[in-house]
Length: 567
Image 1 (spheres, one colour):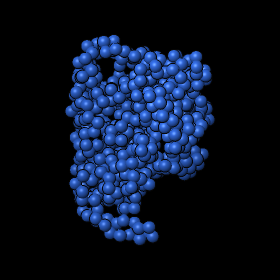
Image 2 (tube, rainbow, N blue to C red):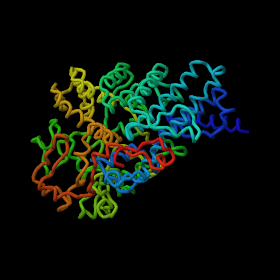
Image 3 (cartoon, rainbow, N blue to C red):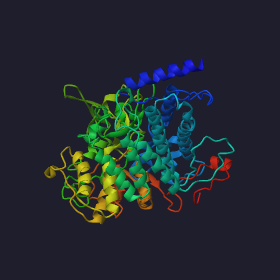
Image 4 (cartoon, rainbow, N blue to C red):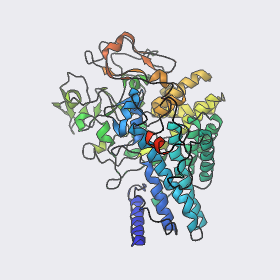
């Protein structure tokens, strides 16, 4: 009976891979006995498929990666998701905050599945073709590295576990992050040497050679290993497998799914694992909740079309702040007076009515939930990225829009940042940055008359540019928390009021000037600050908050774990 169940589950898995643009499926392992499982290729495939399931790091069917930007200077979470995310931005978290335990448990759950496979798959080695056996092993090594990459970034030193352990054996100390990174690099190099550049048919969506090298580049850049980051990113670039999708906004819609820019993604399919992100991100007039929203800092970080900050550009008009701005703003954010899902989006508190755009182009005046609902966007803006109009309103709770976990633009920015930090600035560095910037404008990098190309070779200037470029290009993708901590600027950009759009008199008319920006790219609003909504007042303790604490319940049962400082 057990073998029949495994075969049926495996067949269902293969059917799912072929029915969702070859997406990976989320069937859990049934915890069969190690003594009888791992005996043939079907069972090894089922096990590695189970190891993929923890890439769905979710809260209410929405990726935690997206939520993480809401606990930085770039955004706001209206609710205390995932066991206390909001408390982190307020500095009110403790070792018992659920977020830390949930994340720790989730990542080690994925690691355990990988270890279970890697420790037992040799039982089937004599009956599985060598090439297939090696492919399964390589995928498990990649996935284990992916889960560990989150742990070492968020917690620092953590236990390095590669074998299945009893409860007593699991009482082990934390291993130095540097040792873990060395092991991860070794595993990813091995995986990259085995994995194909791309999969075909029902196997699309699995880890590839490019995914392994891109993950290595990400781990390296997150831990200031510039030479390793540049080399790994260059290896991906030299493959010539990937290219930027020509339309930045459409990249994060169904049109951009599995495009040439996507290196690794989190797939969704109604009936198996679907997404609820449209409910959290979209506007009130579409029936959504607007609980994950961008901040005024995010809005003001976008350059003008001349490539200058709004504090420096003659193109910027504080009374008309969305004119002459980097197009990626409108690809990522729903701004006031723009049309979204058939409604004029307006969060002016006196705008009790707005307009619905009919199919014939005419407009009908309707009640404006985005202004009158007490739980409309607290900042006055909404995220557009990863919210497709095609899902509204019918699939607002059941989106099939994949989330991109690794993409080529990130690789280009990793390469550029690493080379800048090494002070090895050449034409390839400028090209990598300009490819990303030009795509934001929908033009080729050589078309410098239609986008603000970067030409400086000054290291300090380029460091500022690349950090702002990551803020803009990767907004709402979960990178900001790690970036501001590794750059050691969180203590400068996090504390103080988190602003939303102007609320006195609920318009931009009273603004007299642009904000000024400090050396960390953080805006100061001067006397105009009184005009903005204050949605949070945040704190950040630099002696504590650059690392998450080890969950208290794990410290309580494992006396070998030493807590992070000042918790």
